[in-house]
Image 1 (cartoon, rainbow, N blue to C red):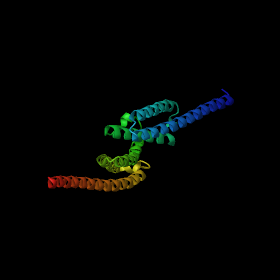
Image 2: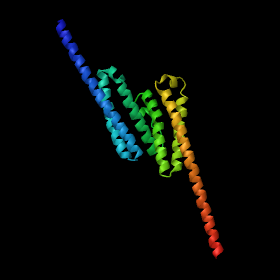
Image 3: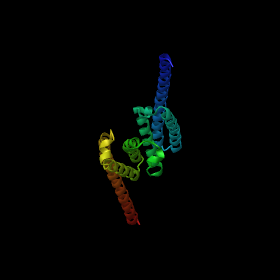
Image 4: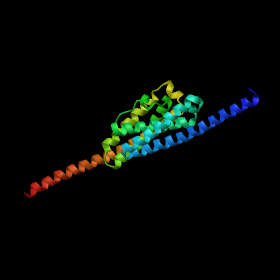
Length: 216
């Protein structure tokens, strides 16, 4: 083969690689968007719609794995990790809100780092769910959300070496700690107000019964 043929072959390979890269970026942006929509649907308790979005995202990750067989270096691009992280967050939140249980990392088929970082972001989404519960007057549900948030935080910060090795985890946990403190304050204030209202209602009932007895 001549040098010209070598160069021509290399150009074709580079073009294919660039096309694959563009497809990966396009698919991962879509997967991220689908996962964000799934999070929104989960907060709205539209679980079927959330699952549909995540199923579409999962198909895109399946395509990614096919591309990785030919271009393995592309799966390490930042946009891929971000998409998988968002997907892990959405799946975990859906499982917690709908079924009140955590989903196994191997069931998501995402790297451990993406799962851990996604799990850290779930704390912020649980705050939103807790606040929605408080607005609906469901203090018990809000308290439960706070407990789950604290549980996630404790488990993540007890990962020893992994806590230091996972890039971005320390920062996310610092943010999570502030989110938990803010949520604890909101839940405490609402719980006290709810308790006071219940005490007032009980007192009103007692006074009402006494008035009836006095009239009779």
